[in-house]
Length: 415
Image (cartoon, rainbow, N blue to C red; front, top):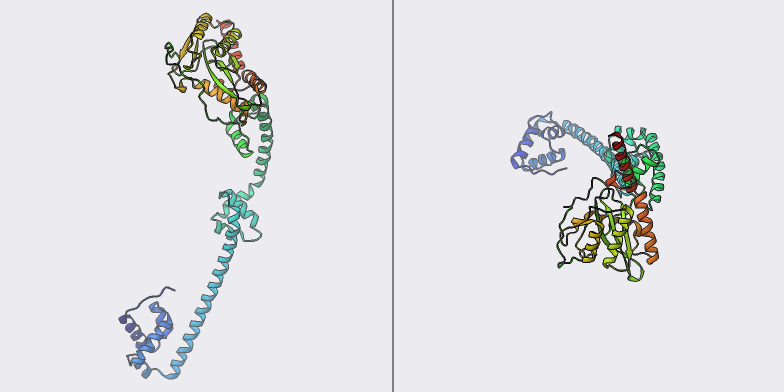
């Protein structure tokens, strides 16, 4: 109980009020004044000891009546104490129950504290504690809990459906050597398995069952600009698209780490229309011969490169006179981005990052030169013919070009 400090005037008025009416008891007066009965009794005793006004009450109150009043006051006080004790015991029991609930809930919610987890905790402990008390402690409406409980069958069905979908996703994921993310997995499920499924659902199930493709690793710069080379204009302006095949190409060199600290180097020529790798070359050096072989392969794949544009960075290989002469011989116009700016060849940089991420799959290097060449060759082949590309509407580069050829033929016949 909160202690109060009463002024001498308040004490004197309280004693005077009690003494003014013989029918008043100490308990009644104390209740009217909002103070404790024992406090008022002490004030009255002190006043009588000083010979105050309360002595007049003795003259008008018989001893028997005073004794009777005292007995009634004691009974009233005892009853009040019993009620307080009863309430205190009830409160203690409530606090003990809440303590036990929260002690168990602390371990249960160690990782997360969501509404679903609270409802599940209530379900698991409803035989130990009353549901009403559990809901109060965990701050969950009983209607919410019962609604959650009634939906158990539907949740179990969804769980089984998620498990079945996860098995199909794992199959697609394994076929892609563990490289596909949710967009490509969704496209594969739609085309190969004939499923009408939303990408968000696939992403949710992949997160739930810890299925994920490889993410980009830290980029490493491999080309060195050649300031003394003849300036070549930037004909791309960061536009890595083309209206048709065999019009715009981009290329770059990337390093391939092999065992014992050695490297192999890959040069590629990629069609901007379909992102198809039409030319590539692997060697243990970075001489002009490396990029020249890749461009020659592109010429052999397409049949001709007349009037095509080839875009690259300012690496010494691409800026060399030998490579410029080859471009002139094949009818190719060179294009280069700004010096030292990787964003001007971003699409090619992204391609190489994806290739190394998906072939290395977290390893620091290839097992050796032979293993490196086999892995890269297998990946490039699958990339062109099978791997789905987001730029192509989740079609592989070869399939995308095939669709374009069919459409062009149809439009020609229609004309």
